[in-house]
Length: 432
Ligand code: UDX
Ligand code: UDX
Image: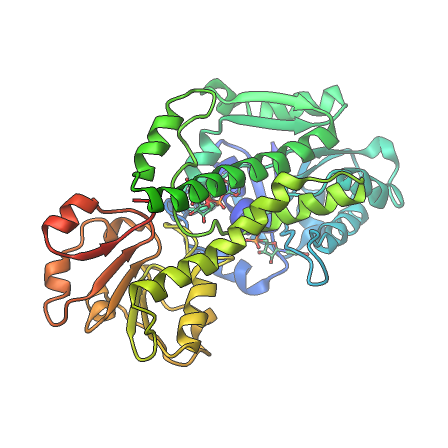
């Protein structure tokens, strides 16, 4: 099939490369000229394991093309995916849809024959109706169909998640369009993905309800961890114990910092706004958001406690600053709250992250990037394991703390409390 992905971000670029890999011809469009020229020069603008190989292979076979020319890409394709970002609005908690609407108006200009227009961006219920209205101002309704097909891939696991999704959700009342999508996804369905079709609004709702539910699971176990810490119970065992009940399920019950990333924080907020618009109190989601915000402060307070309330001039080293491993994405990472607070209170921060230096910290006083774990931990008073990158899972703390014995705060519970105690480390973790 001939496909066009508008917005070559995490969703559009990964989706485009993977659709091309299934044998389709794909145009990836982005308004960012720099991004497109990088891609045309064989460089990948985001850190995503495995993406480079898939892009390269399909680019060389000419199934995958990169362009800033939206009109060319739309007129050359039968299926058009809208994959531009929907960040939280600068004015309130709602999703900023202006990119989506702008792209819809641009698509309309290039429709001369029938096109299926699919919204993959995460958008509030009824956005599909609005996209349809924008396009129909210019184009006869017989010449296009607007469908919702939310994407559920996770950063850092994006290729695998795209190729082996649990389900493919398609929202439309048009049988022909649903069948077209079913054949596009046929190779994934054959491998076991469930294909589920529903109304367009239903599909939009499923995406928000899924993300909010997963965010709820994480906040739930994090709060249980807070209690476990006080009553000497190991939260890891509680996670396993409750997760073994198939009605609950063991995934997304890992304790850690506040959940972050480009989706959970913005989607939970946007869903409560939709609730308010329709006079429905989504009190559970509201309290999840509150709990997650509180968590960032709670962890900073814990750091203070570990350092006996003396932060000034203490050297604190962060291992990992991204919101999760295998990504360079800093959006809504807990480190963005912890590091500025600690540096403002006089701590000297060093950090190491496998994806390198972060602009987010470059204007902060007393915050510096180190290009090795050794350098970051050198002379530290406290080492904080913030992100669970593989390379932090088997550290030689004896060697790292040779010059000066430091305390360790493992926010991802990578090490065993018993082992660390036996080795004589001053070790703190979550819910244990
Ligand atoms: C996607 C979604 O589409 C979002 O709604 C969902 O919640 C998360 O996944 P993501 O792929 O993470 O967003 O977005 P991002 O990495 O920010 O990429 C968006 C791309 O679209 C950028 O490269 C941007 O330059 C491009 N863009 C944006 C356009 O090409 N045109 C525009 O008008 C706006
Ligand atoms: C999420 C959804 O999982 C995905 O389906 C959707 O398409 C986009 O949003 P992503 O944000 O990329 O994906 O990563 P995810 O693995 O879900 O992690 C989100 C946050 O939750 C991270 O900060 C992560 O550290 C945290 N998390 C996740 C936990 O703290 N515990 C867990 O058990 C799982």
